[in-house]
Amino acid sequence: MRSATADGLTWRIDPRADRADELAPGKVMFLTGRAVGRVLDVRREGADLAVTIGPVDITEVIRDGRFATDRPVAFDKVVVYSAEDPFWAQTESEPDPDASGGGGSGGSGGGGGSGSGGRIPGFSAPIGQTTGLAGPREGPVTREGRPPLPPPRLGGPIDAVAGAFRLTPTCCAGGIGAHFHYDREGVRLDGNVELLLTKPSGGFDLVIEGGRITTAKFQIEGGVGLRLKVAGATKVGTQGNIHPYITVPVDFTVPLGQFLGVPFSATINQALEIRTAFSAKDGNIKAEGEYTFTGGLGFGYDKGRFGPPGPQGFTTKNSITNSITGPSVGVNGLLVTYQVRFHVGIGAFGFTTGLYVGLTAAVGLSVGSALGSPITVCKGTGVSLSTDFGVGYTLPAPVVNVINFFLRVFKAKPIERRGGIGSSATFFAKAEIVPDIPLCRA
Image 1 (spheres, helix red, strand yellow):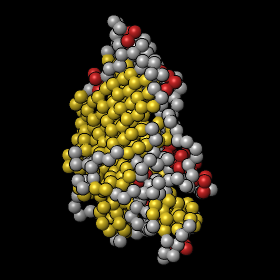
Image 2 (tube, one colour):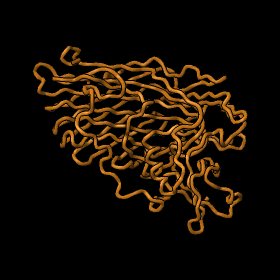
Image 3 (cartoon, rainbow, N blue to C red):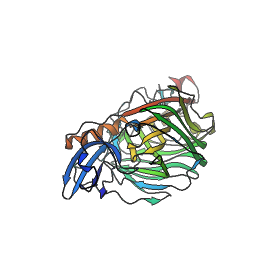
Image 4 (cartoon, helix red, strand yellow):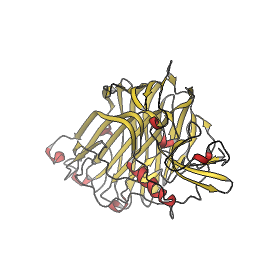
């Protein structure tokens, strides 16, 4: 391998390399533990052979074998890979029938709301127009102009860019999280989300027979809670509402060595979805909360069935509802969805294939108009936590859409959103209104 683009899609190799002449669209390239995927395009670029790849199911790479740990894998010494500012890092969100999240409905007078389904508490429909991508990239994405993959570095926080968002993802000894900041066209957002962990570790067992998954177990221990702190404000009201999906362009990786000759790694990545619902030009909202739970993240799969997933014992440590502030003449809301996902397998960035388990936290906030005072100012929250798990790969719909748009440059076959086996479950959902009176429930 000679080089790669930072976005993880195109790998440049020596055309004289063994079996390089066999690479063709539709085949699977397995070059390194990170350079693996289905070939979408192959072409000569100068002295290099440029190979663009997409995701692949692990059973298309491995037909038979058992891959298991004999001791827990510690996430204390990680290698950090950055994709720089890839074109797929900030995309415009769209409805996802598989998504789940906290939210609300109702909300006249002073605001408020309860319920579920991913809506902003306090609104039965979006207020104003959502611009989606504020500050889009100039011009189309082309083969040229994509930066090279930077060298990896040892762990610790790292600054990252995703379109108009500035990010600082962190991992792993005390937790996994990301700080985000956005300040564009009269809208400002600042926040921090963390999965709180105490000495996280993991174990796995994967059996593949004849290209089929027969047994799979993956468990992450050390989970203790979730912490969220967020603030948003606008000077432009409904005209500036945004709804981006942000893939944090950083992999935190622990190399595990070779299993039957296959270089497995444990990888952690994160994503955010943010939706603002400001109804006034002085709109603002601020809140913070913390939740704890028992049991680790994980799943078991045997004889074609998934066992019950964790975690359990969810409790509120600091109520986010009680912390909400946001004096404004209008009703304002904010929905923040955070996902952290653990992988064991092969591949890079979103194209990792193998065992995976993820935690998704969706927190919807609303605060009523200050014009409701002195009667009351209503506050509403919706919180949900869910887990998704399986063997193979899964990609967010907005990311798949933007990558497939890019692949038109190559006239390549679109990538699929999922491969392999998987399932999901919601283990906590709660809506709250303060004060709990008819005016706020309306």
